Image (cartoon, rainbow, N blue to C red; front, side):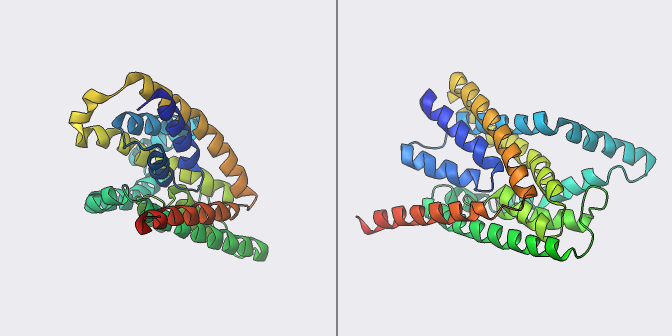
Amino acid sequence: MTVIQGLLLGIVQGLTEFLPVSSSGHLVVTQALMGIESSITVALGVHAGTALSVLVLYGREVWGVISGFFRGMVRRDGSARIAICLVLTSIPAALVGLAASDYVERAFSSPLFVGVGFLISGAVLWYADHMSAKANTARWGESVDEANISYKHAFVVGVAQACAVFPGVSRSGLTISSALALKFDRGFAASYSFIASLPVILGAVILWPLSNPEALSAVNLEVLLLSTAASFVAGLAAMVLLRRVVVRGKLRYFSYYLWTIGAITLLWQARGLLGL
């Protein structure tokens, strides 16, 4: 893999990890277009970069979650609630990732599967944003934020996140959509999704080398650093943009992009299957 390819994949990962368009799906399609296979160098780099972008932008909140957890364990004053919620949100994805690892791995080699995932993600985004807009107009019920999020809320968001272990299905799209459906405050829905991505992303950074120890010898340090830097910068930009989009109730606009790229991906695969 060349430095330019690593740089482009880093930008793709950084933008699409947080924008609700599926980073895994875009990486599969981009690598297929480039004619290259998955690389542990890029996998480590792009995930490390996006994890770092969350820590830079939401470092204070992350530290508050960690310190609150230990304080709550000692004082039993409820300070640990948000940390426990984030753990509950992470559990379903971890279980699905372990139980269905073979199916997930096969899906990553199938742009056809990715195309279907894009279409599904677009439909979910459109429906959730539409329903959230109706709820805001009606002003029915109290919105959910850090002060009143329940363990049930956290687990439901986690189930949505678990569906996104498959490429083409957007993690941020499904977590934010499920949060909006649960009447989360729009700003809190975005920040909760970003912070909840940390265990998933860091898990990938740690587990990928453990499951592919022989591939570590092939790591290209130059490509690793460039892909990390690219995904870091792109990740920061994507989070700032998406938070504004969610707060303004414009999340459904990403649906049109997902439907378009999903249809193009399916047509591209159909041509290959038909030998055209």
